[in-house]
Image 1: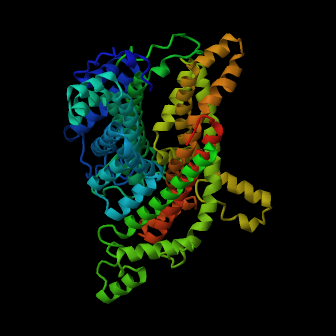
Image 2: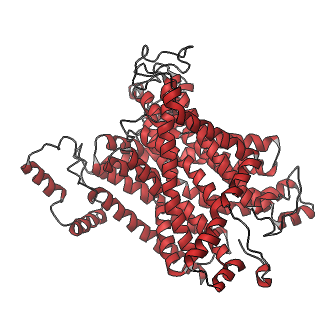
Image 3: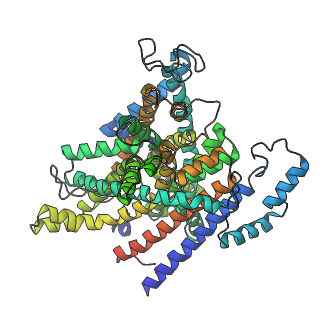
Amino acid sequence: MSVGPDVATGDIPAPRLRRPLDATWRIVKTQPRATAGFVIVLFFVVVALTAPWLAPYGVTEKVGPVFEPPSPEHPLGLDDAGVDMLSLMMWGARVSLVVGFAAALVAMLIGGTIGLLSGYFGGRTDTVLMRMTDYFLVIPDIPLMLVAAAIWGRSLSNIVIIIGVIYWTTTARLIRSQVISLRERVYVKRAHAVGAGHGRILFRHILPQVTPLIVANTVLTVAIAIFAETAIAFLGLGDPTLTSWGKLIENAFSHNAITVDAWWAIVPPGIAVALVILGCTMVGQAIEDTLNPRLRVGHLSVRRFRLRPLQGTDQV
Amino acid sequence: MRGADYVLKRTVFAIITVFVALTLNFVLFRAAPGDATSSLRGCRNCTPEFRDALYAELGLDKSKLEQYWIYLQGLAQGDLGLSFVSRQPVWDELRDPILNTLPMVGLGYLFSIVFGILVGVIAAWRRGTFADWGGLLSALVFYSLPTQWLGLMLLILFSGVLPSSGISDPFIEFTDPSTWEVILDRLEHMILPSLTLGLVLYGEYALIVRSSMLETLGEDYILTARAKGLANWAIVWKHAFRNALLPIVTLVALTLGYVVAGAILVEAVFSYPGIGLVTYEAIFSRDYPVLQGAFLILTLSVVVANYIADLLYFRLDPRISA
């Protein structure tokens, strides 16, 4: 994003973003799409947190015949071992969400750090880091994950690390391009002139500005990580001791739920995964769209016809 | 000359990426904690003599650097090693599956590109209307569904109507089929896997095409075109879409990585004997040479696709300089 001619006159005030997360929160509250997505994700988080108290049965407890169809006592039916599907779904939410959030956190830390350093320092640091990112971006993710999981073993922590280490690239690139434009802003130069060190500029002046973008990206990465977990679990590389939604799909598939028409063993985990991904995507995209003023106008739109807002006048 | 410069730069990048992939492939498989033999199925308790023989056969008794050199030399001659399971050269194991995968993936790709562009463009054009909401919702839904799950759902929906597994009817040979019948049979088996792959990709394409179109529709030259009194379709297709095409080309190339991954999941669901199914089975039988070979070929195909996209991008956008 170009900064425009106002840089020359030097009258951009240092943007006031004391609590950068507040800005993000405001988008979530005011954009209907983001609010809806947030509510969906919140619902599953609550289910995951309360599973030990709310789940009606245990995850290894045989409570009826194999693949029993849904009934009033078991609203989602029973799985291939006669275990209550509803309880499995609730416990599965814990594992799937933990993998999603933890892996996204790993990706955010790596991608955020690389993006900040690369964009801020520029020059050779930038070249080296971005080349590295480019290579990572090209190598196909799921095959790499499968190979790594197959070799290093199937534990939850391994899966989190593998997913996190693979999905930091887009975060790094986005943050970098944002930081490059921020670095040239007058208030940053001014801070530098007053004698602020690199650390202070990065953490006090630049990081708060890119925080909404980092949040948006992390939320989108949660969706990708959950998606990746179901793929790993489906190919038989999930943690064998834990129940996740991906594992439930795999379990039903490998125990012939399809041939006996036991759709209730397959449909719920897929819908749950889809809803969480949908929720995260809605939140993430709403934040990104709000941050991108270029998307707000359409010269051909049927309903509205607005002028493009002047650059820099609508700080989020 | 800017053209030669750009092409040279992208070529060097592609070659270096290939080397990074080759090295990663080597490091992942041989320099991993433990070694290939410690995770070999059934070799946890094998005798020291047998282990030594195995080490020598796999070349693990040499230094890592030497192993790397031998590995590169082998690759240069097209040697991907021997399968642990069938004792056949890996390349022989992979060749036919690759040929099976290509048309299936191609069909799905085509489907997703056509529908993704159509829906994305219409949604952006009719922004804020029912068509936009419908398109956006369908795209978001398909984008959110796990590939393997969508495949299973199609399997349930079309059971009995379309063949659910394999690549051809095992009994067709007894009926002395014509070439046309064989092709038709193959196509029938291809529909469900291709459709699964196509639908998931469709969601992603439609979303990106829509936002890319929204960006170009906000440009001033669209306002100019509108002021000139051009018909809407001319503005959309001739002015906006052409300019929105650039990110779409990159996306189509970048999603090839996803297509490759999707092929593994889809082929596992439909038992479609392509390179994805080979990968899936190699994971289960811990057949590392095959897994390594498949990973290498999947990676190379993505690198090559990216290289082609870079060159295409250059053809499409005269502003690009090295």
